Image 1 (tube, rainbow, N blue to C red):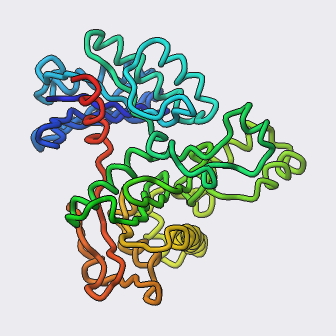
Image 2 (cartoon, rainbow, N blue to C red; image 1 turned 90 degrees about the vertical axis):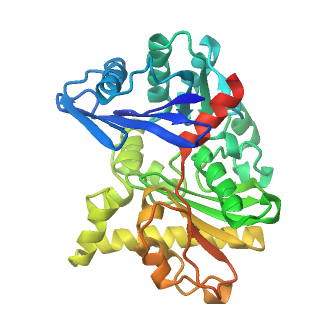
Length: 394
């Protein structure tokens, strides 16, 4: 039972052919720098990577190039036996709370919701449009990042603004990265051989985009991202939480319009805004070389992370597991150690040697004496999307 999973971004398209029965990515690839003369496509199949550099004008050409490179790598789309296509869609608004079979009406609604995720939904729509043209006879399913958080308690999802304005403009906390948070929290229960209903969890999805969630009994009760993916933790290029008054101040004193402020907070802030780099490996190199801006960026990142960790510990009342996932969470022992430093009085003790181990497997990094289990669990959003798409279409 094979599903093609597509994650279409503003300048890139990630794709994977997933064997759902084996829970395995048979083939995976990425097209980057769409719209540039030096765009790249890389496809990995059976341990071998096929790479090309060429001009790719748009998403239509990107997916056609991806499919051609798949065939070149040894697995054509026709031979892959694709039974469904699963698309990652960032924002479902108040309309979509579960995986949805895509038709013209769904496409139009996802496009309309671009106002809530202007960096993401338009690119998601482009990927869907191309895939529907290239695979017209294969059912296509939208899987929404916001779905896992659709039933947040009202106290967690409600902003304290005029209720009529909020209602008229669909303003509430939606949360993102829900596919990852749902997958990882479920994987934690499997790994620990525990009933999900018995666990209070904090999941820290730390990548270029970053978010935290509090999960009680398998259901999300809080999350750091809000109306849009901008709120919450410090991220690669996004500011995360700021005083809303900064927006008005920038409009008045820096003569920035809405688009300029949007670009500043979404593309020129976060780690990049503070240090000039977005890659955490590069940030750590600069820190080790004594770069003061890089050190401050790291410290601000950790400070915000610990604030959310503390808030969710209090909100849950009892924490059984803290889990790190995504690129930074899975690969940066420095971030994990700093985030959980000096929390012995709260039952969290990280084992230094376990934390230093680099592995692609789920693993415990807390000490045997730790009352709270600390895990690193690799996320697999593609598998989660594939399972959802297959469940809806089979």
